[in-house]
Length: 323
Image (cartoon, rainbow, N blue to C red; front, top):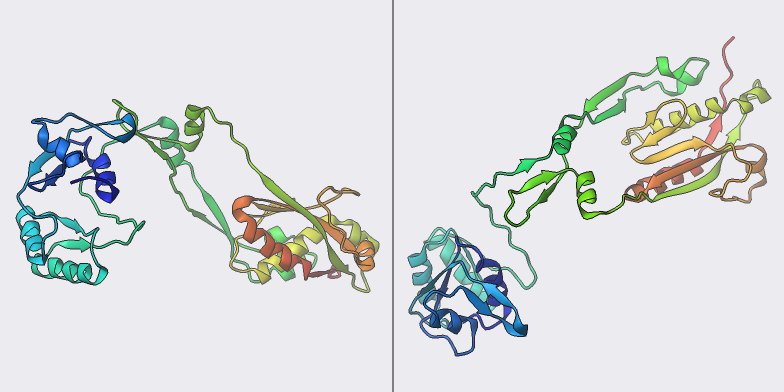
C-alpha cells in the first residue's frame, strides 16, 4: 500500500525512473500512496506529507493478490514476475530464511533477506557512458613510481663507502586513477579530477600535517673524533640503515637530505629551540644525541607513531672509517 516505512523509501527512489515497475495489490487503504496511484489513470505527481511532491515516471500495475499471503502465494507471485533478484524485507526471520531458501532452490532466483539498516548490493549489466576531463585523463598517464630498496648490506655501506653506491633501487609503477563521478541534470555524466571538483564547489585545499621533534642517543667508537658528531649526514644514513633493517616491510626513500615513508618525512633538526621538540629529561641525550624532526599527514598517523616508537629505542653507533 506504500503507507510508510521501507516501501515508501523504495518508492521515492524508484518512482522518477521510467525503467522501474511498481506492482500494487487489488486493494489499498484510502489516503495511502498506493490508493493515489490506483485512483489516477496516469499518475504523474504524488503529493507527500509535508507538502512535498514526487514525480511518477515508473510503470504502475495492479495485481490481485493478498499482501498478507502465505508462502505458496508469494512463490506463485515471484514465479509469475520472474525477477532476477528478490529482496524479502518484512516477516519473521526463521520464516523468511525458509522462504529465501525455497525461492533460490525451486525458482533458481537470487534472494536476499537483509536486516534493518543492512545494505544489499546487486550487480547490474547496465553500463553508463561517461565523459572524462583532460585533467583526469592526464592523471592516468602520470607515473606513480615507488622505490624499493633491495640491499641486504645497508650497514656496511656506512663503513667509509658512499651508501648511494652500495644498494640497488627497484622501481615499480603503481599507477592508479582516482576521480569523482559528477552527474548533473540534463548533462552527460563525467569523471573529473579531485582538484577540479574542489574548484567546481568553490572549496580551498588545506593539508594538515603533524610534527614531532625528539632526540636519538648517539654512541661514539673509541677511534672516532668530534668531527663525526658534526657530520650530520652520517647520522641520517645511520638512521636509514637502522630503519631499513628493522622495518623491512616499509618502503623507505632516501634522498640523502631526508628520509620518507609515504607522507612521513624525517630530517635532522638544526634548531636550538624547535617548537615541535619534546624534552626527554635525560642528561645523556642532551650531550650525546641528535634531534630528528618528523612530520606526517593524518592518513599516516599509525605509521608515524610506529616509526617514532622504533626510533626512540635506537642507539646510533659510529663506525670508524677505513684509511
